[in-house]
Length: 512
Image (tube, rainbow, N blue to C red; front, side, top):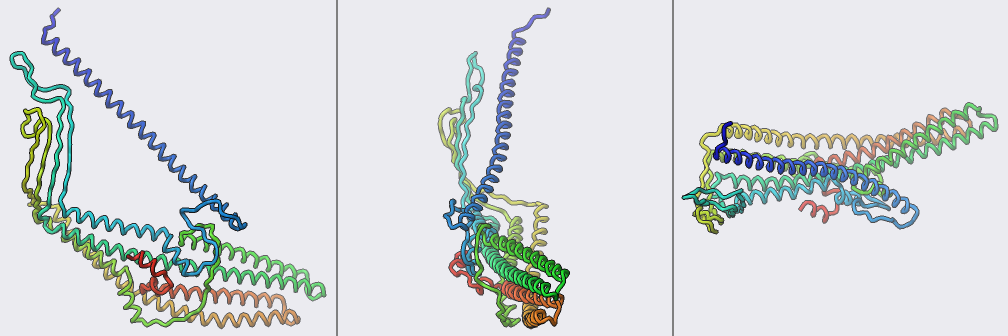
């Protein structure tokens, strides 16, 4: 059998040592992978538990609000303290509703957070213009010292442990105008954010007043439906009395009962519509759904006259959408200008200072030391095809923003013109429905007298009732449509923030 040389023995031992090292490394990697996997499973479970807990807390809070609402209706003290949604109880005017929505409406609160984002972009632009200071450090431990053998003695040239720490400072000197462009873009964005907040405020006021007037309309319709029920109850009683003296038949009584049942169904439908509209209004206001309020304002006809030229002038000067569109053009101009700066070089000054062991200046010295360097750094992109494509894209984007700006102006003019026409149509409709209502009221009065005197039939009285009922609903809807048309005109001219008893101090705080 062949023998095993000393060299073979050394190689075999080294091979075994390497295998042992590889096994240790593989075991360590497997162990940490398993820990990460288990940690991921635990994190997934925690996420699901967090979701379930959130849902349970939401249901518990809703249940507590229901119980609190019941206790309030019984005249007892509420058992919980609400920190999320205020619970309203009492009278509510349009002005109070606007104040509440400006304070608690969630969509407006989301828009207000954009102000912080705009401030952050401004800070970022300022930061890019200033120096950049970074610190880094490393720690390395080797398995063994590397070296060589001299006359049978091992000489090490490295430490088992290496330390180093570096402080770097870089100051931009010239960026081709990119920094100035970024600062101007941030300033335009700040203005754009404020205009978007103004638009959100106006939209909140509009939705609040529209929701409030819708509740008023539906409450009036509910009252009309209740009056119709009362009329049918009285008619049923009259028919029963006529049956007792032989004037009416059993069929007449049956017809009256069916009409009463239909009127009661209409009343219940009207009540459901009121409840739904109130819930939607509470959502706009950002208050608890269990709130119990009484509307103090009412639908009234207050005709106003508006000059078309004055309305257009106010719209073009006051609408935040016009200013927002203009700011988008300015921002895109700066983006295009920034793209052109890629043709120019960038120059910056730098300074690096490194502390380390071994000495970073003399690697053979196993002791702490330091080493620094400073200079200028120039970067200049001579050829970059993607740069040409980016500039072409930004040119197209600028043209799109310019077209959008002109389209926004046209849309504002269209809104004003449409609102003026709608307001005039609504005014004429109110005046017409007033006459129709008076006619229906007189017709019902004469029909009721004729029924009692026996000159008119039950069917004729029911027709008069339905005519008067329809006239009331048409008149109420004409009042509502006039109020909405007036709101649409104020929104089209950008005047909702100034013409509707808005809390000036709160408005100034939101528009700071």
